Length: 123
Image 1 (cartoon, rainbow, N blue to C red):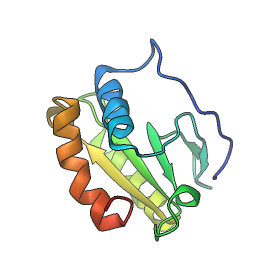
Image 2: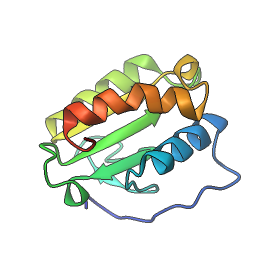
Image 3: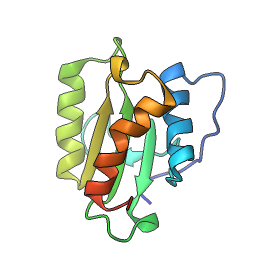
Image 4: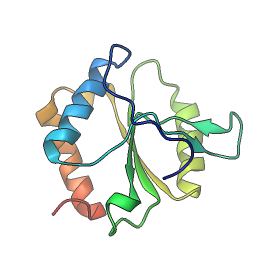
């Protein structure tokens, strides 16, 4: 597991989109973590993804882990692109779900299922 880790519980600070993704992952039976700190060796130095799926839990995964981000209109596409590039160079797979894609738990499951099958964490 990279960096410092706290399995952050769902709480008041979560957005509706984060809650939808949380319940979609739970319904799919995907083991994931929240509140993890990934060292990027660049400024600001650490990255705190919304959701993290660890390679240790899925032996077939060719990445160090999968990062799932719930994008919102407040996200900066340019900053996200730079951050994604850094994380991918470090061996992580980044999945960004746009605000308009996160309509319901069912919708998120429909989006993530083929991605997770391709990555080998779902059959």
